[in-house]
Image 1 (cartoon, one colour):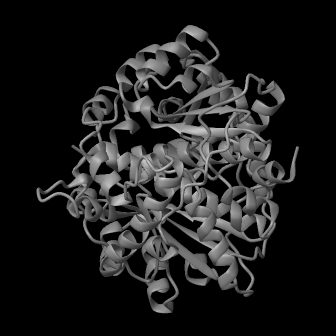
Image 2 (cartoon, chains in turn purple, orange):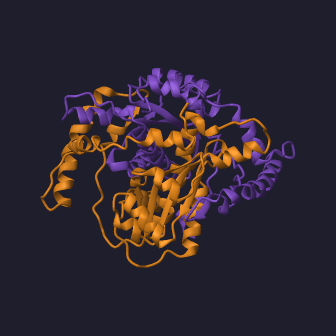
Image 3 (cartoon, chains in turn orange, red):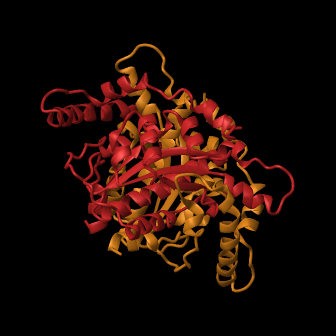
Length: 246
Length: 246
C-alpha cells in the first residue's frame, strides 16, 4: 500500500481544530488540486467561496445548525454547483436564452463537478497534515446562504468544508463491508440485507467505543432516525435559484 | 509540494490502455479507498458495479457513444447513486412506506456520495500508476443501462470509470484561472467574463498544440457547441427510477 492510498484510508472527519493558521500557499495548493479533478466535458461547473469575514462565518455557522467549528475553523469553504459561468460563456456566442440550469442533466453535472473538486481539496488538505469535515448543514437554509453569498441564478451551495490543523484524534468509523457496495455485472438486491446486518453489528461496536458505552445504535437504526429529518425545502429552493430540474 | 498534491495536479484523463491487467489486490485497494471517502450522515448512498462480462461491456460501450475504451479498459466501473440500501435499512424499523428516493435532498446526497467515493478511487488508481477516465456517456441511455445492470428503484448510474495502465501521454488540459473559480465571502458575477476571456486564450493555445494546429477552439466556443447536445431524458428517466425530485 503506497503513501497516498494509506492517506485515503486514514480519513476521519475533524470537528476540532487548533488555532494554527492555514497559510495562503497551503490554500492555493488545495484549490489548485481541486481544479485538477476531472470535470464533465471540461465544464468546470463549480465555484468555491472562501469565508474570511468573521460575522459572515458566524451567520453561516448558525444557519448550518449551530456548528461551532464552522465559525472557528481556520478555513471555511462553500462549494457551489455553478452553471452561471457556463451560461455566460454560451451567451458570448448565442443570442437566444438558454437557461442551462433548467436541465436536470446539467444539475447532475454541476453537482458532481463540485464534489469531485472538493474531494481533491480534501485529500490535498489531508496530505498537508490538515483535517477536514464536509458541512451538509449548509443546505439547512440554502436560500439564506444564497442571499448572504449573493449567489446568482444557476448557482447553489452543495456543501461547506472546514479545514484546519486537527485538535482531536477521532476513531475511524467503519464502513459497509466491501461486498455491500461492490458487485459484478449486476446489482444484487438479494445481498443488501446481509450487508446491512453485518454492518449493523460493526457499527454498534464502534458506537459503543466512541460513546464509552452510552450508545450502541446500529447503522440501520441510525438511518431510520435520520430519515425523518429531511431537507424538504430543497426542490423549491432550487427552482427559485434557476434549477428547474426539467 | 508533497507527493500526493503532485499526483493530484498531474491528473489527465486516459483513454488508451495497455493490455496489462489490474490485479484483484489493486482493485480492492481502489474500492477500499473509495469507501473511505466522506459520506453524508454516513449514508454511504452509492454502489459500484464492476463490469467483467465481455458482452455486457460491449453493450455499455455502444450505449456510451461507441467509446472503444469502455469495451477495452482492464477495469470498467459503473458508479451508482443508491438509495435502495438506505430504504431497506429504514424498512427494518418502520412499517410505513418512506420512498427516500422521492426527495431532491436525498438525490443530492446520493449523487455527491457516489462522486466523493469515485474521486477517491480515481486518486488511488493514479497513485498505483494507473490512469482513469470518467464516462458521463453512461447517461446517454440510462434506462437501458439500468435494465442491463438490473438496478432497482432508488438506484441510478451517475457515471462510468475506465481504469488501466496508460498507453498514451496526453497533455494536461489547462483550467480556468484560480480567480475564476475561487472568491472571498461572496460570488463575483462581475469577474466571470474576465476569467472566461483569459481562459479562452489559454484553451485555444492548448487546443492548437493538442490538434497540431487543426483546431483553435476557445473554451466558451466549446461550451456553446456542447450546449445543444443535452441529455434531455434525465428527468423522465429519474422519475421512472423512483427519483421523483420532490
